[in-house]
Length: 430
Image 1 (cartoon, helix red, strand yellow):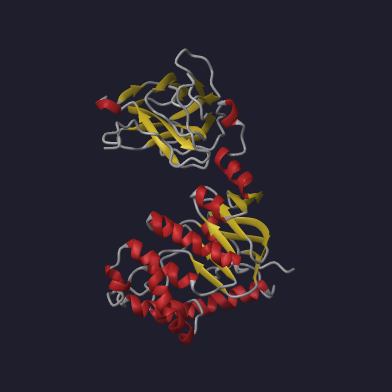
Image 2 (cartoon, one colour):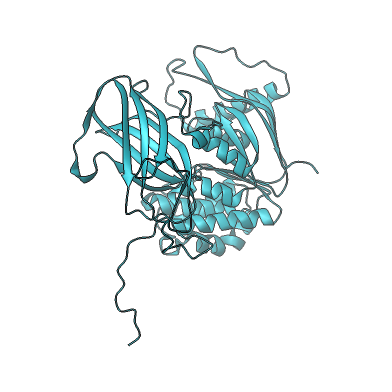
């Protein structure tokens, strides 16, 4: 069986900064430039011309990536911002050409890379369905046959004859996805666009992509929503620094993405090279996380409704005059559950001088629904700038039984993350 997608040694180089003054281009200039670029790409592909020599600083957004995707397979592309995921999909959609390597796509390709790509703001929703459908390769008769279904899926019937410049971002993405999904492509490429829609529409889109895959078509799905990736995909590819760092079963690849391939989540020890987010590099580094009961005994499992304490160590390299610490609880798929900060209760920011800071946050009155969770740590400035933020520093599990034995979670399947404290009234029969 031939793969539906074959990526072989693909690399893409971009030059940083300006390469000379670029005058304003008319539409005619853009068309001519596009034709010339296509000729250059064809010549390089056929090895009739050498790529232009690099000028100045450059960055390889995608670097020697290779993988195959079989027909009917749904593959997630995961990675941090700037890893090269979107560039890879643009190469596969022929929006831009690779510097090296080749991409083979077998069959009709539908792509949804940015909200409203191919839409004209002055045209109505109705007119843009025909325009965008034509850009994606649909014939007019095909668009007319599917028009009612597209509009019903997008839920924009009321605004169909309104210019799309007056649409909200959610309406934009609903209509754009509806057109792309009803193209009936053999290959569907979807970038992080579902984040704009509401939860009901996201579920609808995931259902549609699942339907597309069950019909034997291929889906390549880029997303930061690990729950959606796990629900939709059986396999994932992790992109790090423009390279394919992992390719395999979705659970294994997502786990590596969230942990950075380190043992941090089991030990709580945070090495300096652990994946971190920072707006102020070099200001602070978290070193460890630890979970205990209120008596200070280490915990790996928490009884249902049991209070617990999160301890942390953080090295502050440069003084932070307006600092605050954050301790968050998330699922191991990266869904945020709750958080606590040192500003809670109206407390002021803290002056964090250079040196090692130790602290703890005690969680009482928080009844987590039984499942596996993880601890995220952050230290920030009052204005929101992040000095250091580390995800999945330590995993733990909440059990279904309370420590005292007088309470438990009765359901084998969990819904939600927190059981609230509720006082019931009027539940007795009259």
